[in-house]
Image 1 (cartoon, rainbow, N blue to C red):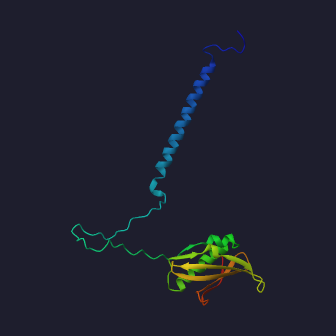
Image 2 (image 1 turned 90 degrees about the horizontal axis):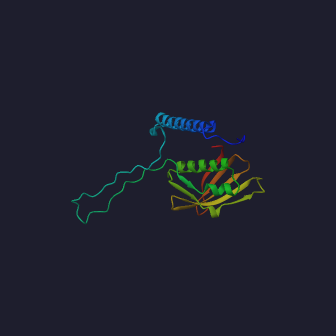
Image 3 (image 1 turned 120 degrees about the vertical axis):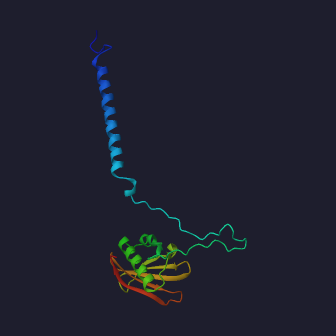
Length: 185
């Protein structure tokens, strides 16, 4: 018999059987660990964001054909407006800290004006930045629409990486708001 030849019932088959048993045992341990994890962390401990349906008035089956259309409840006003287009400001030179400061200043304007705006849409195509030789700082200009109805123009002055001053003007150029210096909000 040659040294490399195997006999039919050599220990080689025993090794294979041992590996199969060990692999099966590892698989069972993994399944038990996963099951234990799910038992210790029930689904209710995770935060799930879902839209909950709101009640609406629906006509009763006995309502006449001339009844008014279904009335939907007025949405609850937001505490702070949704601000669209801030990323366009970062694309032309503001830092993310300064963009957060602009967002803070716009939220302050919404509260201070008494309008409690629901949406501020910054026109990304109108955003431009330039260096102001007289102050040594930079000026970012933009146009925006408030609550889809009121057009305004804005100017953000910034000279360092962490602060801004926001000015908002109506379509006639009248100053509506000056945020004063806002830093790291």
